[in-house]
Structure formats: structure tokens, C-alpha cells
Amino acid sequence: MHKLRDAPGDAEADLKRKLEDIAGEGKVYVLGLGNTDRADDGAGVLVATALKKRFPLFSFSEHDGVEGTVLDISEKDEDAAVLFVDAADLRAAPGSIRIVPKEEIRETEITTHRVAVALMTSLLEKAGKKTAVICIQPKVIAFRADVSAEVQGSIKRLTSVLSDVMSSRT
Amino acid sequence: MNELNVEALSRVEGDGGITVTLDGKKVKSVTLDVHEGPRLIEQLVKGMTPADDLNVIPRICAICTLSHRYSAIRGLEKALGIAPPEKAQLTRELMMLGENVESNSLHTFLLALPDFLGYPSAIAMLNDYGDDVKRALRLKKFGNHVMAVTSGRIVHGENPVLGGFGRYPSKKALEEIKLKAHELILDAVRAVELFASIEYPTYPEAETLFMSVNAPKKQYGFAGETILISNGKEVSAEDYKKLTSERVVSHSFAKRSLYQDKPFTVGANARLINMGKRLDGQAADLFKEHYSDRWLKNPLLNNLAQAIEMLWSLEHIPEMADKVASMDNPPIEQPTRTTGSGTGAVEAPRGTLYHHYDIKDGLIEAADIITPTAQNLDDIEKHMKLTAERMLADDKKDEEVRLGLEMVARAYDPCISCATHLVTLKRI
Image (cartoon, rainbow over all chains, first blue to last red; front, top):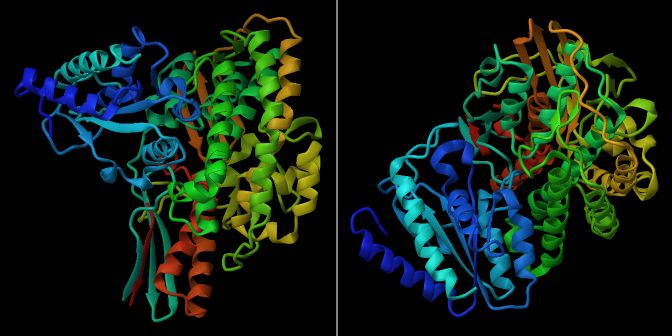
């Protein structure tokens, strides 16, 4: 588990190396999930929104329609990796960042609101794309509350790491 | 006492469970337990202006966001004496068609279909039914797009306002929608074929009542001033309390509804039972082909109803887009009074949704929201109890009974979050 707050420099470099290993040489797409009405739960969307300024064709969020974006990427004839970013209860310190293995993603998460991340990663992998789910531990998920300082810091650091990974591949 | 549990019902929205209490093979009770905490939205909006209410109310649900917004708009416009221009009404109809495609595609292909094809989830279907999974995503993407074009965003769009629209869709966007809807009709036909080919179990079958709005001009649609009941009665939406008689139960955070002390169904099957003769196009042909008396007693057929309705929505989007594009953008109509009451009734994908408001001196004095799932809960329990009794009498294994009960609950496409996982089998 990555705890960027404890050793920011090393942890960021480690996270970057892992994401580069996952991404390979192909293009890198970021898909931010979550609900910005619920403070830290919107961390994934906030990361994707920040990256969209520099990578408008490679960074998407719930606001762009997740399923449609996944379907479009899956049908592109290119070497690509899709990195999902979402808030998740990692049972870790607020702001902790971790790449969650596919086996730990619940298939039953599928709801009437959005297609499950597990289904989207499966669909992408079946189409030959690489995938990873990056999770941020939230502190506050109250309706219309402010994003916590810990998660704000993590959003900033993860955006920086992803920007580095994407810039050499897009 | 023994229990058969579905502690966490998957493939539904929200947190709920099912508990079946058994005495030998005799079913003592079946309860759909809603674990979601109460939302208190009705209290939250007290004292707000109607415009502020519209910013809060759609947050009840991210999939029926436009149904909630539209129902609130209808109730508030009545209370404030606002007559929306024709273009606003048509654009609202268009957004509801989009929401219907978006929601019904997800529920039919990805939430309900795995049960009938013998897969644990849509993920497991990928190898054998990968094209259908992609169909679902294509249709959902398009439904989302129609919602975004009409309301301004995929979720919680702000364009539909009291008296009209903050911004109407462009002619170019409407033309694109029209062309894409034509392209996707075959995907919806596939959904109808799939759900018409299924052999639906008879275990849950029992007569019930079906309620839906009565769309104006004897057309099929998703909003109306009166409510049709399958017993032939028609009641003003303003009398919604007589239709729903809300009450609380000890095992659930969600309120319950009964009509004349009896459970009833709302949803796509109710709409087709009450208004199916008004369908046109290919949807009408397929409805005539596949409708039978079983629709009046088997809730599992709601899945087929949703597929037919999704096809109808896609067939109507081009016509509606043309109508909207042909009109000039009217100004927003203003309130003619600051005190009054009104009830909005619309058909969310999973059934009739009521929003009632009392407004005094421009501020909300009282709000009352009755969701489709809250209306369906008693009916779900009724059909689940019969399913459990009949399956156990047939010596079905506990795992089979669990699945049978989950299929019944999922067929109603419940949105538990809006109403406030799933089966526990208790043996005495």
C-alpha cells in the first residue's frame, strides 16, 4: 500500500514506476470516478478534471459518461492502458493511494446507476487494453462537504504522477 | 426457526436484503429489508425557494435525476400558476425518452439478463454474450447523450427550469440525436427478442393492480395529470395520497404504499398494461406479438416490458427531435402567484414518481415525494412470498430459492437509495 503522506518523494516515484510498468509503451487514458457532491468521494473526478486541461482527449470522468468512454476506447485499434481513479475505503490513513488488484474489485458493485468497474476492466482487457484501478482513501464523504486537506494533497500528487506518465505516451 | 438470507442484494441500486422466515416448509414471512438510511430531503427543502429546490431534489437519484427534476417542475409550476411553452414541454418529453433508454438498457441487459441466461453477472456473460454487453453500453451512452443535450449534463443537468429551459438544444445536436437513434433501433429490437425468448418461471405469478400516469391525448408517454389503474379507474394525480396511503414498517427504512389495503405495481409493465394499445411503430407490433394475460400476474415480464419501451423511446426520439428543432426558443414563463399547491406525476423508468409542494409567499412550506420503489415494496414482498412457498413445495434447494427471490426483486428494477442487498431464509 502506498502512503504518500509518509514519504512523498519515494512513494510518488514508486507509484510512477508501477503505473509505467502497467501502461507499457501504449497510450494512457485516465477515467475518474466518484461523486463530487460528496466531498472526498469525488477525488477521482477531480484528478481527471485536472488532467483534462493538459490531456483533453485522454482524461475523462463521470461527467463525460463512463460507459461510453470505455466502449469507445475498447473499440480503438491501438495499444492503450486505462487507469481508473476512484475513492475507496482502503482501511488506510486518509489520502493514502493504492493500486488495487483486479481480484479485489467487487463484481457485484454493478448498480442501476453505473456499470461496475469490474465489468469495464474486463471489457477493456478482452479488447487487449491494459487496466488498473487507483484508489484514494477518503476522509470525509458528507453531502456537499469540502474535500479534506489530506485528499486534496493526494489529488495534487496523483495528478502530477499521472501527468508524467501520460506526457511521454500521448 | 430457520432463515434464508440474501444479506446484500446485488445488481440493484442501494443497500437492501431479503429475509425469509420458514417453519419447516411453511413460509412465515418474506421481507425486503431496506438498510439505506433516510434521506430527509423533504425536510431539507422546507423554506427554500422553488428554484433552489430544483438544485437539491434531483440529487435524490443519479439515474432518475431528470424524472425527479421533471416531477418537481410539474408540481411547482402548478403551485405557482406557470404554463410552460410548447417547446419546453416537448424538450422535456425528449429528455425523458433519453432517460428511459439509458436506464432500461442498463437494467435489461446488464442487471436482469444474467439471471435468465444462468450467469452470476454481466462480466461472466462477456465471453458468450459480449455483443449484448456492448449493446447495453452503446444504448446507455446514447441515452446519457440525449440527457446531456437536453438538460446540459449527463447527471444533474440544470437546463430544465420552471417555465421552460435555461438553454434549448441546438439544431445540430438534435439532428445528431435523430440519426443515432435510427442506428440503435436494431439494438433495442435485439433486447426485445432476447427477453421474449426467455421461459419465465411461474412461481411468482399472482393477480395484482397496475398504476401509471395517463399520458395526454391518448398517447403513450411519461407524464400526465391523472393516474390510470388497471381496474379501469382513473384518479387525479392531486389525489396521490389516496392512491399510495404511505406507512412505515419496522424492518425497513423505506415507507410502503397500499391502494385500498392492497399492494400494487408501478413500472414499465404497468405502463404497457395501461397504455400499451397506444404504442406505435415496431414497438406496437412486438407488444401485440408478445403480450399475454401472464403480464397481469408475472412481475418477471417487467424486463420484457422495459425492452419494448426502450424500443418505443428510440423510435420516438427522431420525431421529438424534429419537433423541438422546428420551433423558436420561447422566453421562460414566470409565476403568476407566490402561494399555492401542486402535484407532479411522471413515469420514471421504474414507475410513477410523485412530487407534491405547498408554497407560501414564494417559499416551500411542505414537500412530499413518493418514489416508485416505495410503491412497489409491498408488491415485491407479495410475489416473493408466493415464490418462496411454491419453490420450497417443489423441493427446490435453498440456493435456487435465493436466486428465485432475487430475480423477483430485481425484476422491479428497484432503486433502494431513492426509496430510502438481499435474501435471509429463517427456519423456525
